[in-house]
Image (cartoon, rainbow over all chains, first blue to last red; front, side, top):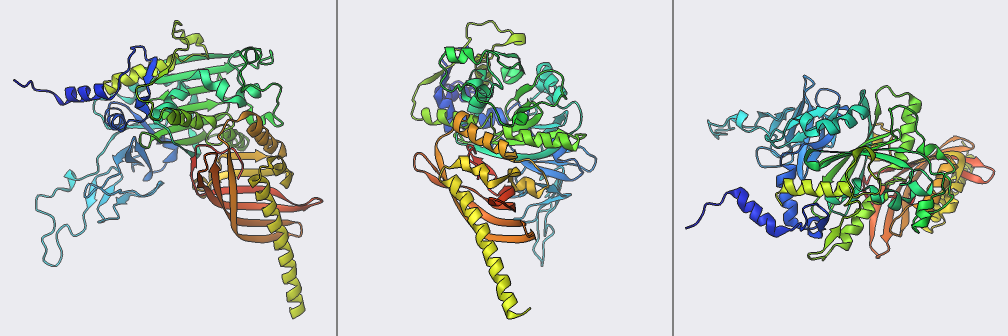
Length: 425
Length: 167
């Protein structure tokens, strides 16, 4: 007799065959998760349309009634709008009629969003307001008598913001945004968004690698001073002199690192002792103002906070950036760097923040290599069959969030355990 | 204006166009042939060099990929490129077109032109890397025309992998 199999069980069985994590501690990562189209499709369903909140932008980008911006949740195009009453709305950018993109612009201001294909029109909340020739023309009967505008709005999403950062979710099961961020992550937002912010523009970086490699990268303190030689070469950050604090949250997937740096006076002894080839001694910047910090936030000149799956909130000195991570197929992702300052910045402070834009993004002096590092893994793992990554650094250590080693892969392991749980793998 | 005056004015304009064109050719020459240490020398000491996406420039927003204020910051960029930054070797080929200029005073000119950068990676793959427009302010110095400011406003908002060589 055939047993009834629930769709969830079928999915689990399918997922089990897709990929196998052989160790429960997240220290072995099957490379297949970076290239499998089936895994990618499952991620869209279970992560991006699942019980998570995805970052889509800053409230400061759409400050006025009827302002809007286009963005994505995973693969799905979405639009975020400011309504007349100042509330926010978010809807899937897919016409309720035949599926065309309704809003074809990156940003703007309008009361009515009209699909160019057949001129169906929607209000800022995504409600259908008008259908041309609904009552027919020249004797044709038009739409059927039971056609109800209220039943054909755009797919509306839960939208909420915390301290001016906007998130949306497809899921009714997701907790409130406040709880999704949780007590370990909210303090990072409270600190960076302690007063109203102003949007300063964005830059975009296209990387030919799987989006999760970027999540690994930002949780990977081990690489920071080894790959990004700008740090260690110019004595701006060395693993031996920096104190870090790491907090973890929801599903183990969020991660909050705060660093306080003191210049290394040993001349990089530990790097020389270990023969680190990327380390160059004695170089100085001709103009070090590109890395100066004007006092404004209490404690810590470096904060990197990952809110799974689409946000990396960064404070490096006075450089404040919300990096949005958008998957573009199994082997590509786009990073959108949203730069911001405070609404009450002096012109000098605003100019200083623009100068610090040199540090991050596609041409970032300290971070340009991150895209490359993920592409190197993507290339290297092509055709790797059942091979796996080894993530063992500090595997024997006892977690001490107050004094986390900056040479650890502990938070990569936490990430993969959370990922497996969410994906049912 | 007499025929002779018109002809003489035209000759002056052709001479200026030639000098500005020479500066631009020299500029793309030092970049495309990897003589990057000479790149800052084409600017005045306090010059501003910026690479800004058109989507920000159109909104009056200032943030871009690279902002160098003065030659020391430009030299730091090149030192970092040579000594610190990690990237796959690649070369640029610049194509420029549509040079337009406006004389502000006898020793100051504002000019604009289109640019396209084709990037070739070490595996031999060539692709259009960036299309954009230069907005330049150049001044006459003892060494010849030099950039007082150069703003590359790029249309290709999705930057492929990274940008380390100035455009």
